[in-house]
Image 1 (cartoon, one colour):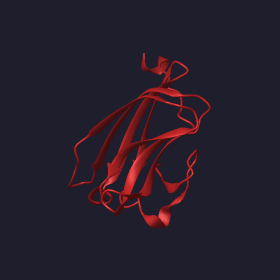
Image 2 (cartoon, rainbow, N blue to C red; image 1 turned 60 degrees about the horizontal axis):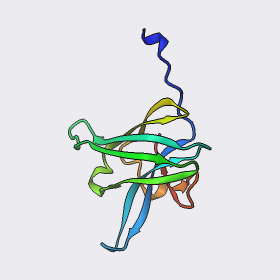
Image 3 (cartoon, rainbow, N blue to C red; image 1 turned 180 degrees about the horizontal axis):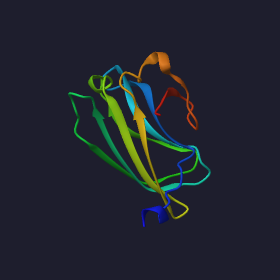
Image 4 (cartoon, helix red, strand yellow; image 1 turned 90 degrees about the vertical axis):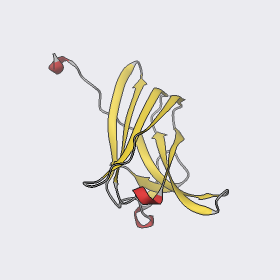
Length: 131
């Protein structure tokens, strides 16, 4: 039965960490974004995020986007400095063309840092892409 179920490979969808200035708190903060670099909208997007290490685990955060248009991006959540030392995982599930897609995006521990920033697809910003 399991061999008959095929989940298509996710292409053109990314999770990125972007450092942005927070006007309210007057600080530079990391924020996680979901990027849709495909030519079609993503529908019913569900995102479950968590941070973990051998000794520590954060609580899970759940997010939902009804639709993410083609070549667009959406902020998922603020990434607190204290969790940058952890492995951060974003499990993303969505429908595209009536098919279910699912992928886990991982930021290994200490991988979100200024020295690893680069250009991001479909955004006019720089950041760190998850693996």
